[in-house]
Image (cartoon, rainbow, N blue to C red; front, side, top):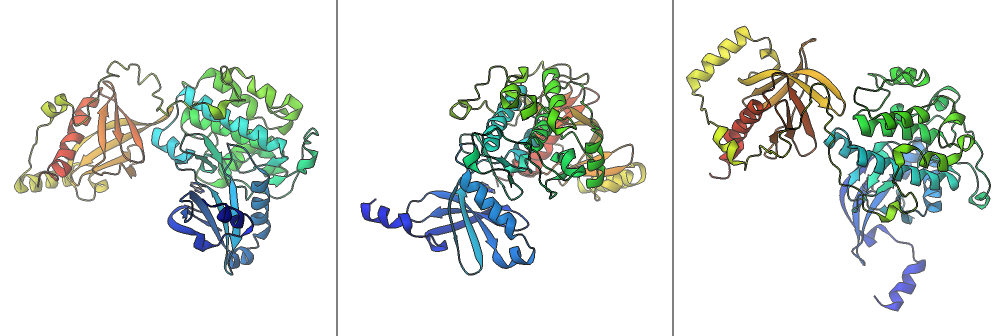
Length: 460
Ligand code: ADE
């Protein structure tokens, strides 16, 4: 790079022509985020593009200004960085660091829940980040797994400061933070703190409430306050109505109970309770070096398979019944159904099976009751493998179709032990427990269907 170009670049505003815009990597109500490459440097960025007309029409100007102001104040490895801003007649552009690994939420969905070392690690990174943010006088107010992105090294990059509140000028940084108040409701139903709902005031410790929700979610698979409607969730939050599922780690439970406290001045980590130093000393974080965590390698993200009453053993933990497994090949018996036989079986199914109405006219190849697990939570489902292929699951008590496991060539079943089997898909691993302890039968049948529909594809 020439000295000249370096000098001239310094003061010249970028324009959209300095970047090649690629795919959309994020979409909000007021913005679209694109993956983009700077032409000169080939550096990848995430560029947030906002339509001026839309922002003005919806009266969101102050949120956009706020976001820029906050991002400009931040300089910490656990936050998305704002590199440049520019505009043209119609749009505003924020050039941000690109968090290549996407949202933490996607990993929660993919793995159902995290094991203890991963939950400890990622919530510790959030604590280190919040400690910094609050020192800068900023409350995030919308902390949630969608807003926690991951970079190439799998460290967190917190984003989305459209709801943030700046409580004090950074010049006052040395002063003890005050419990500030503000009066506009923001946030997402499941992570919003009770004080924001009832008094419409946000405190620094409103972010600690969200942290409590995230600790609970990483460890168990679901956030603590759930409901069909926002209103139900709000009711539960203001009444502190939530439960820990069986098998929830007791040390993590103690931490969550100290964070999910209705009074914002009594949450572990807030000024009144001894600040972040006290929070970092909680036994859940034993062994974490908060000061150097950004320089250390995060533990690999592995799914947590709880040893529950229905899943007592991991005796085949080293056994993998994948397609390349010689044993699997033995088991798979390619049963070809003739057209006549299909017709006969379908007629019979139509007359006798109460599950026929859920399978879109497809022939059921195997059915059985399973526990469909999400972290520590399990639901009883009738699993239906059909031609197509499809894997439907139905709530047997209410006779309601709850969904399908999406089939693709990448789908892969795996027996974990007698009871438990996984169905791996690109976006999610489904954890299923066969009530009859015949997980291997499921794996064999699903593999057979895979062979039938995808196995011969490459040979043709
Ligand atoms: N989605 C929204 N913002 C993003 C960013 N900075 N990096 C990656 N994905 C994003």
